[in-house]
Length: 154
Image (cartoon, rainbow, N blue to C red; front, side, top):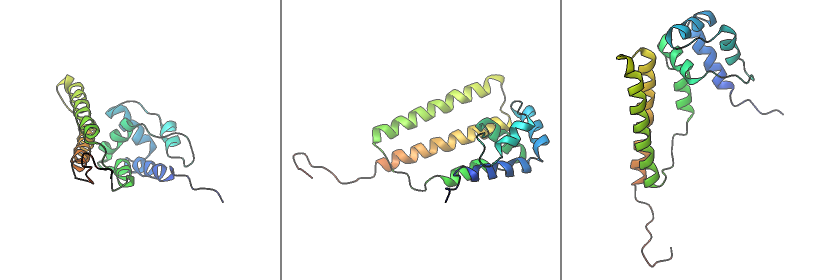
């Protein structure tokens, strides 16, 4: 018995995203106008189950902004484990600071031309969501667990 392809759901969501954009031709046009050129054949390959090609995240964000639905990114978020194990507080706080720095770096780059388009707003929203997740993980690391008392061997 063969194992099911774990990426099949992502290919299905890619196909749904392209359809929500009006099909391959319209999705390709949306990419060219919204972020960068992405050909019809390449878009087509990215929705073929079992194929090696996947949409780059900038193309996903561009197409989701175009159709107004977070089809792929919402599915990816839903597929994440609902419970995240908190790590060491120092590591979690480092992740918060690094995530904040990455967010600010990207914001400066986006605003270099003095405006933020729909694709860039979607990207900033995604980065903010990631930062909120990092803050929550840092908060979870503060939750007291079993305490070791100096000199005890627990």
